[in-house]
Amino acid sequence: MLFIIALDLSPIISQDIFVRGAEDAIIEHAAQKEEGPLFLYLAFQSVHAPLQVPQVYEDMYPDEPNPARKTYSGGFHAFLEIFGALDNVHQPLICLCSRNGDCNG
Picture (tube, rainbow, N blue to C red):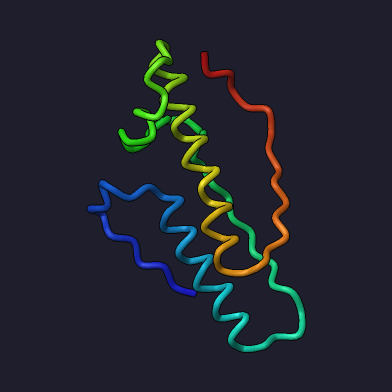
């Protein structure tokens, strides 16, 4: 699978690109009627430094006074939307792994 990434994607965050690629891979796998399961590993950086998220996600937390936590919360909200997007494509078994990273306020 080939990904072509343009430099001017200001309204798009990286996870959107990854999810589109995952959706394509899942649909292609299903269309080929492969016998075995599809293993797809996606490593998202939505809640990793440097914290950046479209303003629409930060705006979901108007009562949060800490700017870093507002950005983190918006990034995590965006991350959770991934599961809805992938679930609409197929019936996935999703294993979520995380590590204890930096504390963010």
